[in-house]
Image (cartoon, rainbow over all chains, first blue to last red; front, side):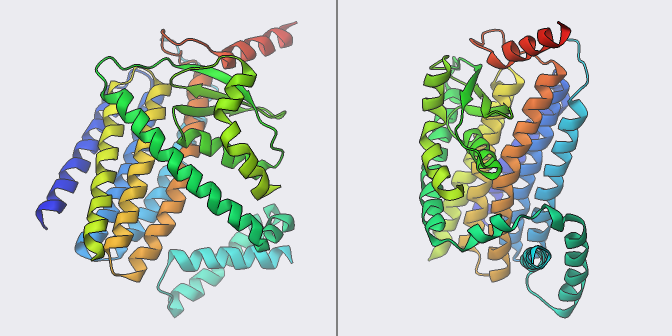
Length: 88
Length: 163
Length: 116
């Protein structure tokens, strides 16, 4: 771990906390869904960085699987939201 | 023929996913590719496969990717400016634009490109070729003007690639 | 030699990710948040993956980084359309300072046609 790696992980951790804030306090259900979607993409970058720093290639497998599963999960959430009614 | 192509494409994708290949990956991949071909092979069209062997399309695709990368960078600097500006100079709205593209894949790529480029996000598409686009800074409300702003810069290249 | 280039790309990517998440917090409604977050976080993650592929010497990591880049580039705008459509059909209103809403106008027209 060099100083660069610590900086990258700290900044990406800050991103994750901002997304978690939106998931926890989002005023409407779609806001929370957006937070989950973005959190998924940030985590793909996170595990790619882990693969670079540790040199272990199975972290890239995690990144690939996470891309596909986050995509399917977001589509499922969007279909779940569609066709319901929501009063403010 | 169609089934053979579906098998080759899905097996190739599996090999990329599980690089480096060993006998375990190859044997599981054979089973997985056969299962995928059985269920989803009928969705593959031979016309789509034939387009893979046309070098001119590759040339236009590379041009398109370069234009798209430039546009994506402009879009991101634009969004960064709007987010960091203390008063947030945004003027959002949903406008309607028309596209002349007929091919389904071309329409999909167009909608994804619109989402990735300056201040626009496609919301819905109708069967007769209208797109509804959420625009973070509306500059033109009329259909023709908005179309030339949003769709115009991609349409000619996409038509060369896909049609 | 390729390591400094990769580190620079990763740094720019992380900065874009952070900007996107700040946009996710600051902007006023779902559609604007979706716009800012999808664009910047997609570009940021693509830059991180490119940087990893450039800086790493392992062929396995490079192939998988390129594959993940293509998948992110296809998947994330598609997920954004689905969410925007889902949010609209759920009835989440646009921000009150929005200037125009052709989608709502056209949906309203269709509803009247069906009623008549």
